[in-house]
Each structure stands twice: as structure tokens, then as C-alpha cells.
Image (cartoon, rainbow, N blue to C red; front, side):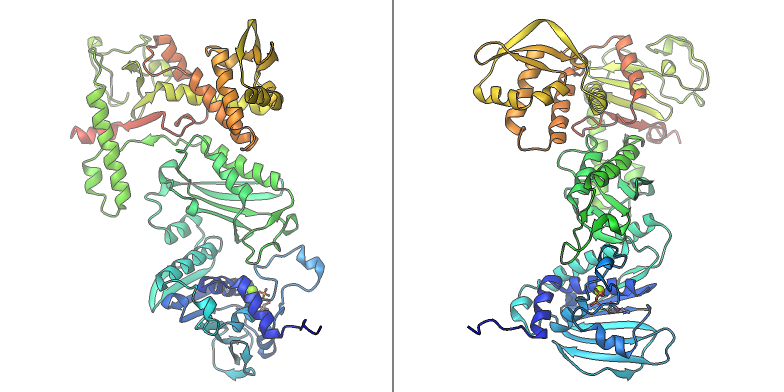
Length: 601
Ligand code: ADP
Ligand code: MG
């Protein structure tokens, strides 16, 4: 009895602070968001000792008058929403009216503010909840809020702060999350008096990215820009080419109406968009900016608003996947082989990893030519059409002997040879490419299967003689549980006795694979992963397996017409530069690089 009491105002704020303010970086986030909401065009963030000693945020926004300055630090004090209906339509970054009260409950805070049309600034000081009255002082237009000694009276929380460097890392990360979507904002970050970032306002997203992450990209073409505006979802994105991929997803930034968010539907869509373009353990670099009506999602589901709830998550997923995938498949992502020498010499401003990569390519090339020196005296013309000197017919060996009509390079004009029954070397306008015949064919089969499956189930043919095979109970269970999936794949299995099934129909596209062999592997997959992974992932795995089995093998000698068919088939696909497992199918060598190597230029 009498055990329940009402917590006083300061306790309430302290508890709220526990949710919103985890570390100095959280203060930076809240205060800079306030500056943006106040219409600032310039914001400066200064920190000392990783923000543990001091954080100071200065803006040139609207400012506050004496009354608002006092009110701003009250809990649940906000100018951004008034009634329940406003919650459905939040266009500002803040709205809960908690941040300033929380911060003032756990640190020494001093705020100075002056409105644009006022000749007087005001200031207020609050020490862990104990506030002084607002008093006039001198100050510029806008607002400066200084936060000292975060958590100094809550040692349990202070203990969780890490070294200055680690905290600074978190601050920089927050800074980046704000700077990326706000390219029109002039932003500065200072630590211990040293300027770490000075980001002048810009019109270019690419520029903002390279201002923030100079180490991430080595050239202007490393990020592919794309945009779309469909079904109420506006998307703008910078997509890293496969070679700028990372070992973690830390360079995947997604924003919704200017707010950094983390969302599993979007992450999945990004992963899907790069399917087949990257090795399994690599993560693409992606900057994705989405705009949607505020009424299409709920931002009030997470204390720091880093997660939102979409009312139509499927739409978001398919829009993101659609625009990214289309752009990636429509872009030439060929791995361009760089030759060493000059390239390396002038690599002064390149990151070490770039140099290592170049060296690896150079080594791989040298190795390749050591191993794959054509056995027969086959020659192929490496000079581009325009610059080629006339040569006698005895020097030419084009596999197809059609005469050479200028100027549009039809496939028939191109020269190619198969080497080691595994690779096709093909002349191109720019130089030549080396194609891994298995990987290329696999890629094309995979895309074909995928496209068909997206439209409909796979076309199948009925076997003249059903082929039977034995199964375990678990396998029989998996077959029964996945009949609709099997139907979609064009595989019909009928029970043929105890623990025996027969393959009745089989996908036409896989005609050269043994039906039983394929179906057995398929069932193994269903048993292993059928219930644990999303259907889409399961399909992807099945299709890669199928494409791998049905594709031309390495070591398989191809006839002229087979090579021609394989090369011509490429035209039907937007992107064939990597196999479904993410390995390259094609490596390009440019004639200009060769000429440099042979000292012809
Ligand atoms: P919220 O941002 O959720 O409204 P805050 O506690 O962060 O809550 O801020 C309270 C109020 O103080 C804001 O609604 C705004 O009116 C005012 N305010 C805060 N920071 C600034 C600023 N830098 N410039 C102008 N007004 C500000
Ligand atoms: Mg706020």
C-alpha cells in the first residue's frame, strides 16, 4: 500500500534519455536534426574528447525566442505536432519533444538562440535537470547548443562510453547519415579543434559521397546513378560496381524522406538486385534515397526512429528491386583488366587495396597466358578495324570466313578462338575479351530460367518412359510438401510404389541433364533448406544448380557453330558478365593497354 508513487519530472526525463541518448553520437543526431527542422542551411558540429567532454552544435536556423527557449527543454515540448492526426503525417525529423529534455537531464547544457528578426539573443543553462531562468545574452542568428560532460551524474551510463576514438567513430557515422541526404546543407565536423569534414552545400550526390568517403571509390564511374518515380515511391540511388564491394554491409545507406533507416525489406531487395553479380560473401556499396508520402508508413515505432513500418512493404521491396536490378543489368559491368607498369606507377593516390587488386589482375593475366598459350598456330587480329594495317590472308585466321563488311561490327566480323576447350577469346572493338564458356552459358541459362519462372511455370516435356527412383521418408515428405514448387519448375513426380517416385515431366530447358540426377539434387535441397529459407532464395538456389548442370562444361570442345551460337545468344541478355555464383564470365583487355605494354604508344 502506498508503494506506487509518481516519478518526478527529472526521473521521467532520465528514463526517456536512456532510450534516446545512448552516447555522444545520439546527441549529435538529435541536435542536428533539430537544426534541420529549424530550416538551417549551415550546421557546425564540434566535439572534444569524442564528445564525452563537449559537444557543440551551431546552426543558422529559425532560432527561438525567450519563451520557446525555456519551453524547448520541457519534456514532451514540441512545435512539430499538435494532434493525433499530425502523427500520421510527420514531415519533420523530430516530433516527440523528448530530445532536449532528455539531454538536459543527463549533462550540463547551455543553449543560446536568436530569432532571425530579433536583435536580442537569449540563453539558458541546465545542469542535469536543474535549469536557470532564461536571460538575454549576445549571440548570432540561429541556435548554439553545448552539451558538456555527458552522463557525468549517471556513472553507470558513463561507464558504457568507449574511448574517444570509438565515440568519434560513432559521431562521424551519424554525421554521414545526416550529410548524405542533406546535400544542400553546409556541414562541418570538428574534433579537438581540428576540422575533420567540411562539406559545402552541393547539387551532386556523387560529390557528397566522395566528400564523405574518399577511400570508398577510386573513379567517377565506380558508382552508377539511377532513379525512378513510380507507384508513389520515388527512388534515387548510387550503386557501387561489383569491384567496389565490401566484406560487410556497412556501406549500404538507405534513407526515407531524408531520414536514415534500416529496413529488412530494403536490404533484401538490394541483395536480390545484386544476385549473381557478386561473390556470396561480398556486400555491395549502395546509397539509396527513397521518398514516399508520410502517410504510407509509420515512423513512430522505434525510439531513435531508425526503423519504420511500411504499410505496403511488398511494394517498397518490388520497387527497390526493380529499379536497382534493371539498372545493374543494363550496365556494362565487365571486369576490365588493368595491365601493370604505367598504371601502377601513377597509382599514387590510390588506396593500397586498389593496388593490390591491380597486381592480382596482372598476375592472373600473366599466369593465364603462361597456361593457356594456344597450342596450334592460331592467330587473331588484335588491331581495331580502323587502325589495322593490311595483312596478307595467310596471317588471318578468322574462324568464320565471311568477308568483312565495314563498319558496324557484326558478330560474324569478330574473331574468336576456343582455347583449352574451356575459354573463348574474342576480338572486340576495344581489344579482346576472354570468356569462360561454362560461366557464360551458365549465366544465360540462369537468366532464362529466371525470366520464364517470373512469368509462369517452366515449360516441361513428358518423358516417354517415366524414370523412377527411390527416396527416404524425409525426401518423400519434402516432395509432398513442395508439390506446387515442383509444378512451377515443370517437374511432375508420381508415387510408384513404397518409397519410389517416377519423374513424369521435366523442364525443356534442362533437356541435356539427366532427369533423375537433377530431381535427386532438387529434393536434397528441399529437404535441407525447404522450410528454412524464403521461397525466392530457394528458387534462386535451385535455378543456379540447374543452370550449372545444364551449361556447357569446361573442357568441352565446341564447334564453330556452337561458339557462334553461344556468343550470339549474349545479345538476348542485358548482363552476362558474371555467373550466378558471382564469378566473372568475361574479362576484357583493352587494345590501348596492350599498345602501352608493347610500347607502341
Ligand atoms: P522535437 O524535435 O521532437 O520537437 P526536441 O526536444 O528535440 O523535440 O525540441 C523541442 C523543440 O525545440 C522543437 O520542437 C523546436 O521547436 C525547438 N528547437 C529545438 N532545437 C532547435 C533549433 N536548433 N532551432 C530552433 N528551434 C529548436
Ligand atoms: Mg528534436
